[in-house]
Length: 472
Ligand code: C2O
Ligand code: CU
Ligand code: CU
Image 1 (spheres, protein in one colour):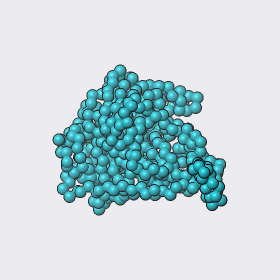
Image 2 (cartoon, protein in one colour):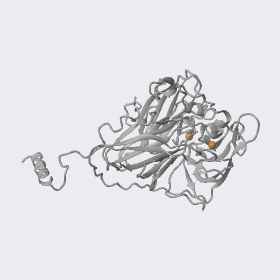
Image 3 (tube, protein in one colour):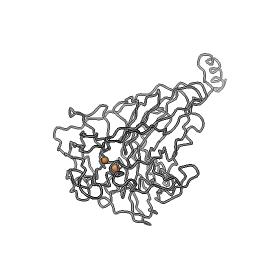
Image 4 (cartoon, helix red, strand yellow):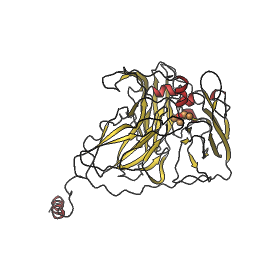
């Protein structure tokens, strides 16, 4: 008897006990992610360990509100730009062309690359002028979800639509965590006719609050629908690419299992009912959907109180919807262990960096700063490769600020001075109203000039930004 026949026999024998022998394993419904999946960047290099992509920044007409045209600023014609996928250790080459009417750069948020490739104008590279080109060429040493955005006039340029995701995969990660989806959360400010709000909308108040567009976007779509099969896990890789908006997501009767953050997997997963992402932050979450077959479940944006007036009388909003397939629940494979050993950084000999986030009094435009000094007058903090430092960021303003450091990951410390558990590598952390955050960072390598700033980009542009000079 052929082995095929044996298999069929076995199937018949076991059919009563275990359904599904001849059926394929259950999967998400056909086309489940087609309403949101990001366009992939085309890899132009045939070598397995090199990803080479073309990226052009240009103004393009896109349709965000139905039937209305928006002349947005885009990478390769879309909002967001294409999804760049690499594997940990790969070399990534990006042939960048600037066809915008303004100079720009690309910053690779979270990637531990050489300072020359960090897109910090004036420090790591010159601005790329309209019509100019620049080749970004770097290695991606850490698995995780990263993102790219301009670092010239950032609030305006990102607000106009310039951002995209870079996913660095680790083939050694446990398989079968769930069907994966990269979700770029953002917002955009549009006029009635679909045109972009001017970047200075709201004047000084706009700067102070941080400008939030009224239109919430998931991978550039308004309230799209994602298909789901009841009982099967999905793995969402999320980034908040908004210029100012905090995202707090909730889904009734469900909890998110957060397995990763800015810099890859956590020490161990944590369950959470609400998922908060400040601008710049990422989350890697698993979710198993439950409900009645055929039901539609809204994933809601819930106002997050980031200080004076920011949550006052603001309604919740639907960000996207899940449509449960009209099929009986499936049973997923048991969740494999997701853990990572992360050694706490030793703070014993750490140097101290004490910063205050400030709002300067004065006439004219709102001016913010660090230790009372706006970025354009600031002297860099000097450090040496190999040093460890504990940074204390004190907030003297009535608003939260998401603080971001380029080039290095840090570990957030609790009140007791010990790292917060589960341990995780972060590059952006929320500093609450009238509070402080401490973190420990080791300048592992890569000398050069690195920026740090509030990732409410209107605040960064108003002066809440500084530089760290790491000497070889
Ligand atoms: Cu996404 Cu300078 O940052
Ligand atoms: Cu960054
Ligand atoms: Cu801020």
